[in-house]
Length: 76
View 1 (cartoon, one colour):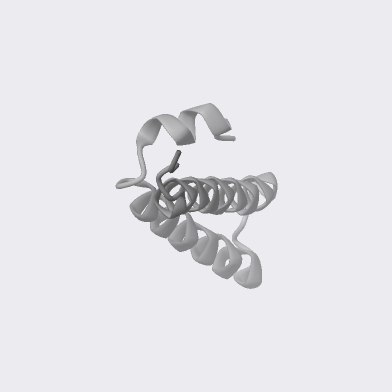
View 2: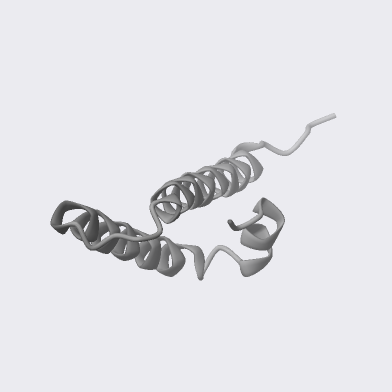
């Protein structure tokens, strides 16, 4: 299980690659389950939740950068 603080520490530029790696692992785990070769059934759940965590943090970062750029300068 990956903690959200660990994911945030990786940086926005490496998160898409980590997400891709987890999706590949998820595919392989599903394939193993379908063929009856899967032994660690709990890993499927961990990978699915890690993917959700990464997607959530990526969305948070996207919103924060968009909000920072959308703020107009204050005029007094």
